Amino acid sequence: ALCEQLKANKQGIILGVDRLKTIDKQIGERMKLYGMIYKDINLEFEIIGTFPESIARYAQSAVFNRDYLYDSLDAWPRSHNGQPHPLAQKNMNLVWLRVPSNAAFEQIARQIENSPLYTSPAVKSQTLSSAVSSFLDAYRDLIWGARFLLSPAILVTLSLVISNSISISVRERRKEMAVLKVLGFQPMHILLLVIGEALLIGTVSGLLSAGLMLYFINHVMGGLKLPIAFFQAFNIPSEAIGWGLAIGVGTALVGSLIPAWNARRVRVSDVFSKVA
Image 1 (cartoon, rainbow, N blue to C red):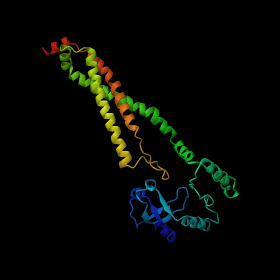
Image 2: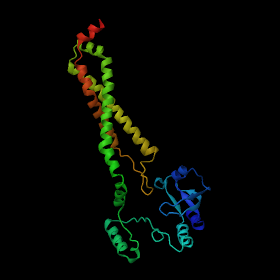
Image 3: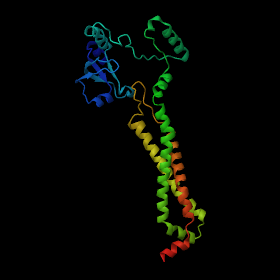
Image 4: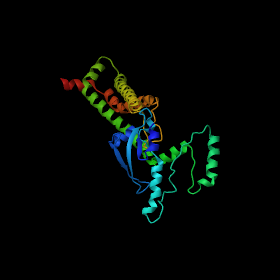
């Protein structure tokens, strides 16, 4: 029904729910769209509706009647000494085709690329995976930094925080450890107790944080959304629970080794001589 309204009203526009919230507008209000790629093509619109909230991929999108843009491009020469707009012949930006197989895609791509209708300007055909790759290429350095610099730095920081916490706990419980040694506990038993406590905390923390983040992103946020409206949101896979467990256990183990080694070296005579 909204599309039918767009056919009758060239100045109508349909917005995704998230985009509507971003610009702080309501259905029925008017807005002005300033061209960035289509420089100096500024269009007035009336918001006539939104996409269904159940379709997450359109939450940031907008749709309007293309004839409105074409009319503006056709009117451009009248106010610019007869010169056409630089993008007058380049206004087909993106077309999606769903095909049954790679063979079908290759056949269609050959037909498009060999057609004399699409040579000036040339139309490029590529698969969705290639399009995603090209889009993410701009984020290559950022992804590399997050993977090989930020992630190790976070793990080291977690280990240092755990090490500091366990060290404080060991210092505060030196008397208890001395009592355990009097009762017959060996240094290795003390070491294992300290490490076991750290591993328990790391296991619970890793599972809890990964589980909460998995639920929040997948079920509350509706997935991780790329800053391009055509792609669906990505859900965090359930394997993240295992990664959270591994990170929690690993950082707890590394962070507790030195405090546990110091705990096993607690001397009964030193502790009780200070008490006396």
